[in-house]
Image 1 (tube, helix red, strand yellow):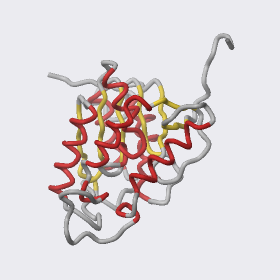
Image 2 (spheres, one colour; image 1 turned 45 degrees about the horizontal axis):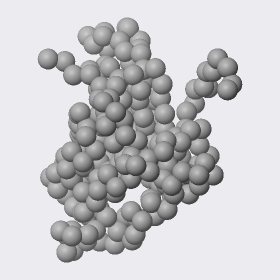
Image 3 (cartoon, one colour; image 1 turned 135 degrees about the vertical axis):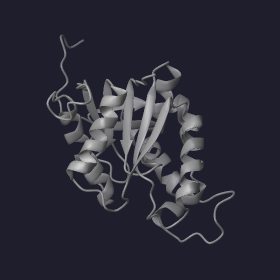
Image 4 (tube, one colour; image 1 turned 60 degrees about the vertical axis):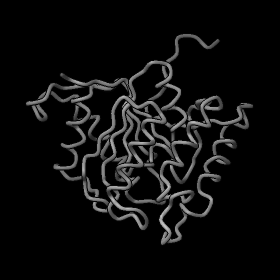
Length: 233
């Protein structure tokens, strides 16, 4: 039986999507939309935790957010590249799930994997609609692609008010105890930017994002495609 989703969120590693847009995911899932996350790598190069633990944490976070689907393509961590093999894997995932909307990391970020993930997804969305590209899978046209922020925010094109679901976002982030610390974290954790109050900084960023619109917590997004309106009201 085939599976389809309304929204498909790509991240280089499990926890990327949650950092950038867990509130938006939770809000749309609660509204009855099918939301999926596809993690490109198993994050095997992470300084803390291990592949099996990260898998368990991702599953727990998915349950908190109400995901309809989560997958991991098993691409090599810190060796993401714009190769045919990796593009084909992402294109196949899009065609398999036929999402109306795709999200990817913003294309400027301190982590190289996040930037390459953004490029790969953008190309895969384009490839997915070409009927002669991977003809064994039916072509899929994604209606819109949006980009979310992980480490480095920038001016946004739109905001989603996530105030009412912000507790869910923080619960999802705290599922990644191997990355952010907390109860049950590895006693031998290596200090990284993620272990130094990262969740608190994400909260501050989301608070700042909503400030000008008088929203307590908001998540910002960017699009490369102009918005189409009929009338300004």
